[in-house]
Image (cartoon, rainbow, N blue to C red; front, side, top):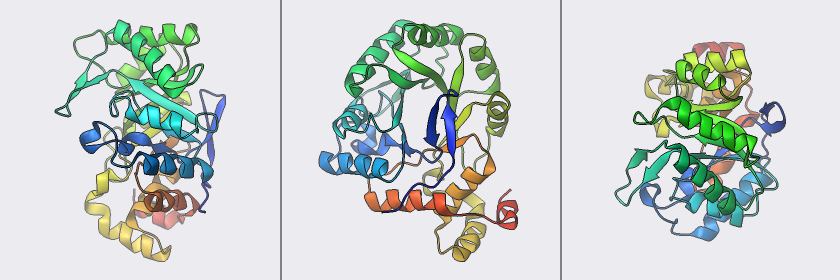
Length: 278
């Protein structure tokens, strides 16, 4: 079995995790709605991830909705991994992602997610995306209150800019920020820099660009050939090398693909290889 050899990061200064995590969005049905066609296989992927040393799993109440969280509980991994979930998006059968940051909704979803995961408190609870119809500070304050009440242990943000991060820090300690980020898409590099400044974990979602790594493909392939690897493994290795606070969370519904992702943690890029991708 391939093992996770990425270095560690302390979520909120107290929850050590290997920096290469797992994103549990893809263990649901088509369009991230409903259950997967094979729930046993989905639970097996989760179990295999943890057995491989992946001890940081990201999910959300909107994945399914509810399906991903339920499968995580059923796989029996919540005692062996830090589980981060999110609230702030509504779903429908058309597959839409509707922003909903009302404080009462967030509080309700925290209770629902806690029960669905089968935990006493949620390790890391993230605001999935700011809602233009709800003052950002009101939404964040709901997360702060949930932390004070012991329903959640740590607060995270997702899909935010530096200004929103700084605003949130006025209300509550922020443990992580989760934004889209990969070797070919660094539009939120300034948010990563802010996270480095504050010692905040930076969860990179779509760390493989959903298979599209843009104009860097040829360079990635050249470097991959030297490591008997794939361009996507090099992309993950670059993320781990790029900053000590990056927490890539590649997702998959396949054990083979999972092992390929985990193997990327064992790749050491040379200084020249890293520089070629800057």
